[in-house]
Image 1 (tube, one colour):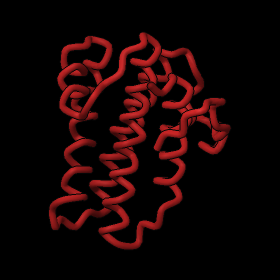
Image 2: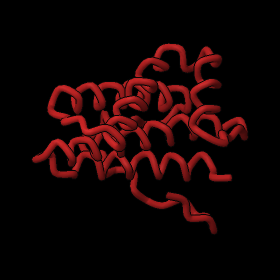
Image 3: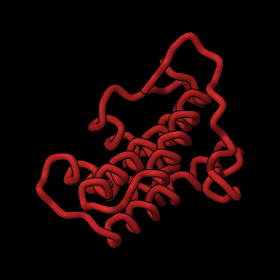
Image 4: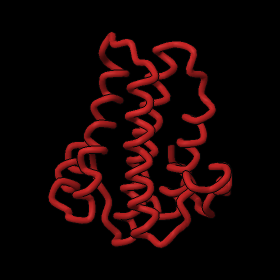
Length: 143
């Protein structure tokens, strides 16, 4: 199973990709939203890895988040990101600045909560989110 640092590495780097992605078309905006969702997922997984707890699918993760009081303040944010991401991948919806702003705000709330709970610096509050891009030392490469 991936470690906490591996999840944080993935979360941070997914956010960097989303930030750098072109936002010229509804499709690219939809993919930026999807990448933000997966960044948020890795933040949640990083928190749970602290307790050696790992999920085995999106449904289990959402169900467990809903029961965990730690995530009560960001549960709606996570569900919103999940829904936006799913629709971007599977529905012919045209995303724009409004949906991207919602996704960025939801991601920021999840990132802030997890970073606070883990006692680590929030990369969204740094001058640049490029500050944490060093891969963790591991024999396992995760996507």
